[in-house]
Length: 267
Image (cartoon, rainbow, N blue to C red; front, side, top):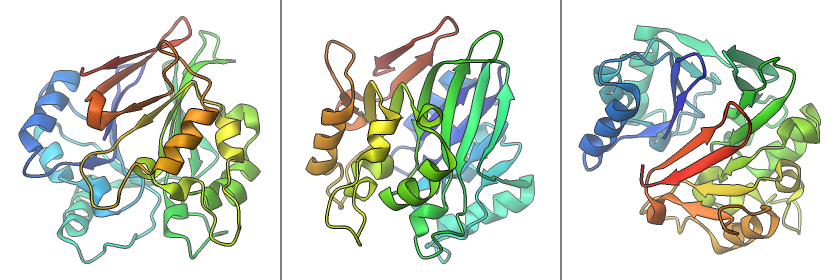
């Protein structure tokens, strides 16, 4: 779950996984950051898997969501309670279907939508989600001062055959990268190839990688993925390259208006 406060004051939430066990803590944190009762301009759902939209109605009850944005792709959990609750809310508040190669500016904050439901990879469910690059732009708007890449569960195939064909290396370069798919190997594994794919990580060239992960039955984050992130991140924070929410807690990333960034733990 990523909370975004734009330069002009607009509030966004990218994905959520609010459960019975964490509901009180998560909603209290949202109230602390956004202010209880203050509206959210958009809930941006990377893709409609249950763990990326669970509890969105509870979020809406506390901080009203003005609109839901997603790629329009149904996803793989259409029979779940989470899916039905999400779609009911989507119909209630209205939706926006995100298209790749589009961007929105909110003051000096730019949201660049790098990926959407991609017809080039119809059999790849994780290729149908939204990837966002959040940029802090200069006062003149002609340069990016700092940025964060939010890849959702996007995998290596959509980066190789989609995003890196749509964008230049300069476009995808980001100060901070959130590890895709909670640190899964899918970000580096293309089943038809016999090697690990890392061209996209080299193009993003992050200083640090944040892994959003908790207790799970999938073994995330995977050792191979962590090794790649350690190898290809340039390093910051006294040489640290990877920060995990399961041992660092909730993190606050500030993209500074004068350039640069700051990452704080247990915020």
